[in-house]
Image (cartoon, rainbow, N blue to C red; front, side):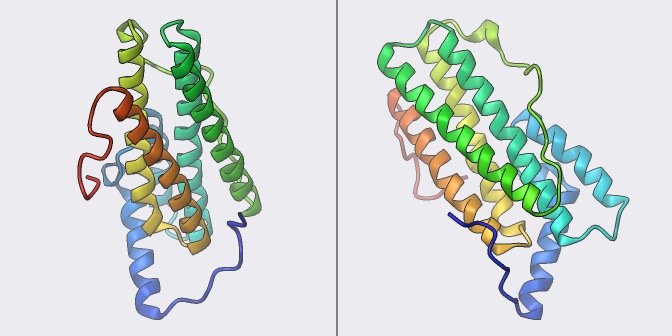
Length: 201
């Protein structure tokens, strides 16, 4: 999937709305529900953006991409914790590792996008503050993973309308769909309604 084709020209009104949306996204961590890591990264980048009023749409796209990369790294680490916990059945472990593989592919695509925009991609943290003491059985692990996947869906839903490059928005929508499927499958495994409503909130 080529996520970096040249951006089509937009009408003045659409472009103005897009710029306003990007500024809103970058100036408020509360505009998107992210994991703790994502919120921390976004807050730091948003503060930097506030002091640089000349930040271009491309630079802002890099900020959003790096926020997504950070959250994806956190998901990879979380699935690793689950895989190594010894709490998952062989069937569930297989699915967890498959989902982890998807997150690794997301990272690769997002990192490539950052590089193609002339930016520097963030690295994974050496340690994550996961609630390890609360992971006592398979249900706990599935609930933990489902919470992260739900956060990812919310994060990508918030990011899509604020990308300056619409091809990046399309790529984010594709990743969002994958995260939503993860969330639905995990909910189903927990005995919950996999699709609790007609609209995500």
